[in-house]
Amino acid sequence: MTTIKLPNAFSLSAHDFEMDVKELPITTIVYLLANGYSQSLTDAGTTAAAKAAIDEVKAENARRAARGWPILTKVEQNAFIASDAVTELKAEASKAKRAERVDALLAGTMIYGARGPNGPRRTPMEQWIYDAAESTIRAFARTAGLKVPSDKDELAAMIDGYIEANRPEFEARYATQPKGDLAALFAKG
Image (cartoon, rainbow, N blue to C red; front, side, top):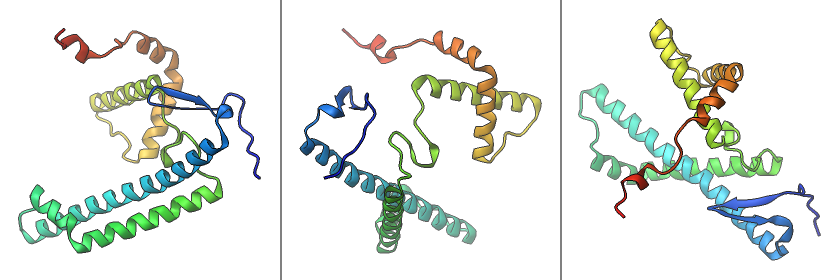
């Protein structure tokens, strides 16, 4: 039997439902582990297959453009994606990404709440602050005739630095933002 030590306040939450893991029967925990493992591999494979298909469509359109041919229409793109050659590429990409995921799981580098190389998900407030900081930096660069870094990591570091230097102002601005469902304002009742 394996013993797992969990933080005192460890709970699971999704879709407005929350469960304290320490109150769950072992059969439920085993089910969640098995289902989570399966879903994790499915997610990794599906994402890789979709990216492979999109990349192959882009490559085919680049080949066509280089020859002076028209690019694929949406209908032709769908047929192209369903072709045996692209289906094989999707399967290879999916299998490779699933193998990477298994390796990461075995190595213990998959962290709950993290989104792959992007790190943990931001709270709504953190996302709003990040977006506001990025917009401010881009507007400043445009006005000053400067270029925003094209390297994603370099831009993220710039945004993070700007946020940390101005966090109180961003948090104050966030507090004044309207909350709620705008669609509800237009609902007929």
